[in-house]
Structures are given as structure tokens and as C-alpha cells.
Image (cartoon, rainbow, N blue to C red; front, side, top):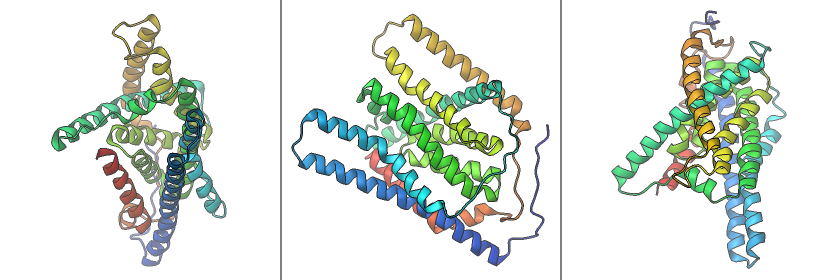
Length: 317
């Protein structure tokens, strides 16, 4: 199947159209940036209060776990409240998602998750060598500090569900008017920046593009949620339960897990390379021939990037 492109036939973007769409983009990204900051301030304030108040250690641990869980949901509910009066919906290219297709997308996601992790680890090690400052593994440190049940609730259930609602549902619904390529790429970029560290940025960006594509093509947020849940389970919860990395001995279940990872990585790379030309990307009519030109000059988007850079710097130092 050939790529299905449909282009806006206007020879150029009209000044009034650019101004209108610039306001729309500013509103979208400033809403996200403001929601992100308000959520951070709220959680940091409560954490500071916990340090100042003498409460039992067990109770404090539970409260901190709850605070960790509500960060993304907090962002979602603020954005949802703001966006609900601005109805926007995507027009799916296809409504036929089979189990076989879902498995193929999962393999592609695992391929990019592993590839992105390798790039992220390389960049993190490079920063450590250039700065002379050890930049630890953010993901490993967080997972090791949590109980398996806590990892399951936060990383496998709460995180994937609300991240997909924020970065796929709310953002893409408001970016879809500029075309699938733009919506998928920008949503994935903001998703990667949201993680706040180079270790996670690259795989979050690559996987974010695939999840965004699934949502744009099939039109149902449940599909990327399912993929995201499985990815987080495979990437964090299952290794924790199997005790990978804790000893030099490898059990049968650990071996099965490793073979599954290797098979998924190879299969995902092959599927992506062989099927890329069949992608149903297209550019919608009516909104900006060159949306990227407007995006990179946009105040709301710049605010989002600046906040993300500050988080990156904070995690490095």
C-alpha cells in the first residue's frame, strides 16, 4: 500500500491563519506547561510538609507513594477541565485492529524501547564522562526503591493509563488538525521531554511515535493504553519479580524472559523496516502548510521546552 498523502493546496499560509493557529498552539502547550508546573509545586509542597511533620514512617511511605501516583493524573484532570470546552476528535484512517496487528505493534515498540534505552544509556555515560559527575540510572534507582505491588500500581496501571490520556488523547486531539506526522512527532517529543532525563528520553520519544501512530490510525485510545501497559510490565515489573540483576545465576524463567526480549527486538526491527512504506501517514487539509515553522516560534511550546530542560539539568546535577 502506498503512502496516502493529501496536501493543502494553498500556495502559502495566510498571515491571519498563522496568527489563529499560533494562538491555538500556545493555548495547548501553555496549558500543558502550566498543568505540569502546578502539579510539581503541589507535590513538592506536600513532600516538604511531610519532612516538617513528625508522622510514623509507614504512614509517610504510603503518603509519598500516593503523591508519586497522582502526578500525571493531576496533569490530566487540569488539562481535561480546560480542554473539554474545545471539542476536537481525530478521524481514524482505519478501524480494524486485530490481535495479530497489536502483537506486531508491541514488537515494534519493544524494538524501539531497547534501541532508545541503548542510546539513552550512551548519552548518560557520555555526560558523566564530560562533566566528571556520576549520573545514575534514574529508572533502576526508582524501581529498586519500590515494592513490587507499588511498581505494578504506578508503572503498570496508573502511569500508562494517564500518560496515554495526556499525551495521546488530549494532545493529539488538539494537534491532529495539522496532520498525523506533526501530531505524532510533537506528542512523542513532549512525552520524551516529560520524563526529564536522557536515559528515558530517547525510548519514550521513539515508542511515543508508535503509540501516537496507533491512536491516529485506529482512533481508539484503548489500543495505545494496552500497548503501554504491556511495555511497562515487561520493562519494569516482570524483571523486578524475576530478580534480574540481583545474582549471577540465571533461572529458567529469567532465560525465557531474555529470549522473549531478544525475539521481540529482532521481530520488531524486521516488522518496522519491512512495513514502514505501508504507513498510513497523511497531512490533513486546512491548517498550515508549514506547522513546524509556527511551532518553534510558539510561546507555549517554548515554555514547555524550557521547563523540561530545567528538569533535565536538575536530574544531571
